[in-house]
Image (cartoon, rainbow, N blue to C red; front, side, top):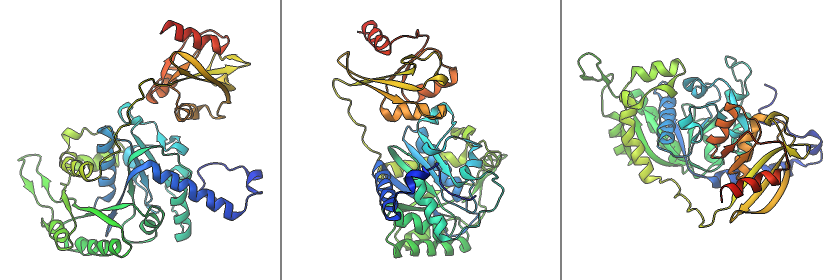
Length: 398
């Protein structure tokens, strides 16, 4: 990897900018991202092997399945596991942290990891602190997360560069610390708590993972280690104890095979035990209240264009005519250049606030992606003046 940039920058434009100007713009983008995300939760552990990533991914999935807008950011630079656990091989849209997720999660979960940038995921990442810090900043400044209720950040074990960079870049972040009941793990957790206290990082709570194992034959719960150590440690340091999660072979197997997305929560002791934890987080860190729709809502229509008329196919569209409609009348019309990459069209139209797309021929996959972005899709329309298409639709639906 020669660069950790998520997008190709304009070299000509960049040659005329000063480093100070670039840094200021980056700071502004980071601040804008922070404002759009209501709660940021850093998943930490004092040592490796405690199932920290499983908790991070499980928490993100549980919140997204409840309908919340969730981001999952893997900043474990040297051992990223999130994409493999979810079976996400290739990003559909890296700049929007969007993968080809199941329909029920597509609009609610965004995922980013350093593995998006790696041609060979088996290669070691040999980076020092400054490069790690810059990558985390780029995840926040270049990825267009959009409004989120929760951003779950999976960090590497310990108290090194990555959690420090997150705390410096997003000072309002709250830490959730994962441990196991073993004394050696609890000793390292005490260091994590001390780390958070020293840098004024609020701790939302402590979770004891792998606290037991339910025998599939007799149904009896068997302790893998001694139990209760996490709760005692939390009480000693006056940190909320969020609960104990059992060892679940189904989760381990599904994560290893990259099919954690397909695991039914109701069939998993781990996800069942995670529910009270999610309930607690939603209570103490409530999502943003849904905005009330205006009484007379504006609609936005998009028509793909070719030579000034509606394009026969989305793939040949050079421009889009964008119409703003209020009270069933066209209030504004503008023509915008189409994204160079057709895969970027659904997210681009969604950012413009498009509610309807009127087109000729659209593949079923394109229709599905646009519908998942909340757009009504109308196809099979003739090649003609886009104004007529919109006016005809409004007349038909008035």
